[in-house]
Each structure stands twice: as C-alpha cells, then as structure tokens.
Amino acid sequence: MNYLDKVNKRTIEYFKILEPNFPEWLIEYITTEEMLKQQYISVTCGTIYSNLFESSYFFSSLDHSIAVALIIWHFTHDKKQTLSGLFHDIATPVFKHCVDFLNGDYMTQESTEDLTSKMISESKEIMTLLKKDNILLNEVDDYHKYPIADNDTPKLSSDRLEYSLSNALLTYNLLDLNEIREIYNDIEIQKNENGVDELSFKTKAIARKFVIITSRLSVIYREDRTRYSMQFLADIIKNLNKEGKITKEDLYKLKESDVIEMINNSKYKNIYKIWKEAELVKVSDEKPKNVYYVKQHAKIRFINPLVNGKRVSDICKIAKNMIDKNLAYDMSKYVYIDGINL
Image (tube, rainbow, N blue to C red; front, side, top):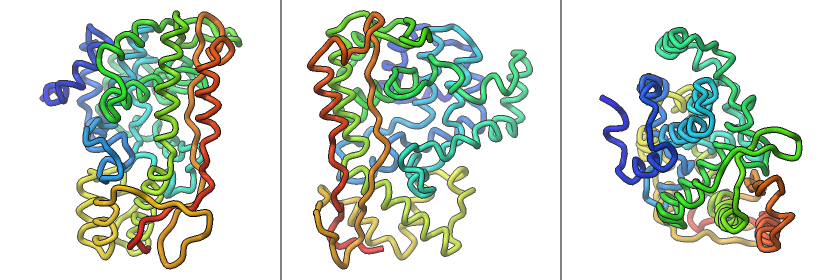
C-alpha cells in the first residue's frame, strides 16, 4: 500500500503546496521498511501526548522527511539532494530529540545523526534502489553537504523551512494553508553573503511575517514546558534502560505507542499520568524540594532569512526586534510539576 494513501488529508494539501507534481520516483524510497518506521514517531518529541501542549495533530517524522524532500525537489530537481533530505531523519528514535536529552546533547540535538549512513547502508531495499538510480551512498547519507537541504543557523534551509511551516500550520495553528502558500511562493534560491545558494525571500513583508511566526515557534521549542517534558521523558527512558526494561536499540525499532505502553506497565505509570494530564508547569528561582525538576538550557532554533541578498534583520526593525526578543528568552529557572518524583 502506498503510504501517501493513508496520510491525513490536511497533510496531503500541505504537500501539494510544497510540490504540486509529486515525484513518483520517490514513492519506492518512501515505502522501504526503514523509512516507514518513521511514520510512528511524532515530530513533537513526545509533547503531543501531554495536555501541557495544545496540539493533538500527529505529523510524523516520515511526513516531515517527505516534506523536506518535496521542498528540495521543488527548488533543485536533483535526485541526490532530494534523497539526502528524505533520509536525513532515518535514524530518528522514538520521541525524536528527547533521545538527545537522554544522550546529554540537548544543546546541539544531533546525537543520532551519526547513524544515518549505517541505517541506509544496511537497508537492502534502499541500496538496491540507489544502485538502480546510479547513486552512491556518500551522495545521499549526509544532507549537510547540500546547502539547500541544510545549512547553519540562522540561515534558511529546506529542513528549517519545513518544520517551521508544518508546525505553524498543523501543530500550533498559527497559519492557514493560504498563508503557507503565500510564504512558500515568495521563496527562491539566491546567493548569500558567502556566495553560497540559500533559500531566500523576494519580499520584505513576507520575510518579516515568516520571522514573526518562526520567532514564536522558536520559543515554543525550548520554553519551560518543552524542556521539562523532553527531559522528563528522557529520564523515564534512562531509568527503564538501567532497569533492563528497554535498550537504546529498542528506541530505533519500537513505535512510540509501544514505549508508552511500556511506561504504563512500569512503576512510572502514575507520574506519566500526572504529566499527561497536567495543564501547566511551575517555575521557581529557588531549587524546589521533594519534587522532580528540570533546570537547563536547550538548542536555540532561529531563522534570519535573506531578502534579495540582505538579512532581514538588517533591513527590517520589526524582524530584528522579534529575533532579539526570541534570543533573550530566559531558560534559567527551575521547572517542575507537583506530584512528580523520579
């Protein structure tokens, strides 16, 4: 069965904005076993399962990867770059970047990327398809080598563009389909200050709108409730691992629903229930006593896109203020939920 046949209609409408003519050759790659595993992982890093967060829309890691591939194809029509985008999260485990928190990599959130080449190379299905298309493994196993696919913060890449658009549209309802279309259709490839290709805007007003939205999203990605939830889930998994209930390898094989079932069958069932039903976290300047707390920083995701060769912050005071406000977000407090102890 074609995976796309069972994707939510709203997600399909979004895909059609990114690329009206879906590249049929991509479907064989999407329906490989290694890629299909990603359909059971939410891009929300587990936060979708708690009432602390407003979203209940399940946009999977596979949906994200397909959308990144569609953006790259739309702007380049290059198979190798497109596949590098499709494969970039093939090594994503359950609860996505929560495992970076488990690995102590909450500042860069790249701890699973080293497995990408290994997973592709060990897939007979994918390697057969690549051979048929005369594509080498090292041409698709690292999307960092293609600046349209990925580049350094705060530049705009297909990956950064995708999770901004899908989170704004589907997860947090900050934009509608028409607004997504307006933003997307204003983007083209331009040369940046280093002479490198970069996804860029043609219109200052639309670039400003994009920065306003992505600055709001950037705070959501690392605000108190998010940092708490990701570390909380990571610590439960860490404890289950120490107790011999789950291995790190399991995190790359199981569905999120499987791991949640394991938690619900463990001694962490009650605190997971408290977190799941919680509607707010508490913060304190002082270390709270007799309760599980989180106090740490997290990766800052922000975008300062080009507009006709200039960074929007250099030509728009509103955009600069939004970026500055975003970067100033305070992550210094202790965060906790009453009744949770680990």
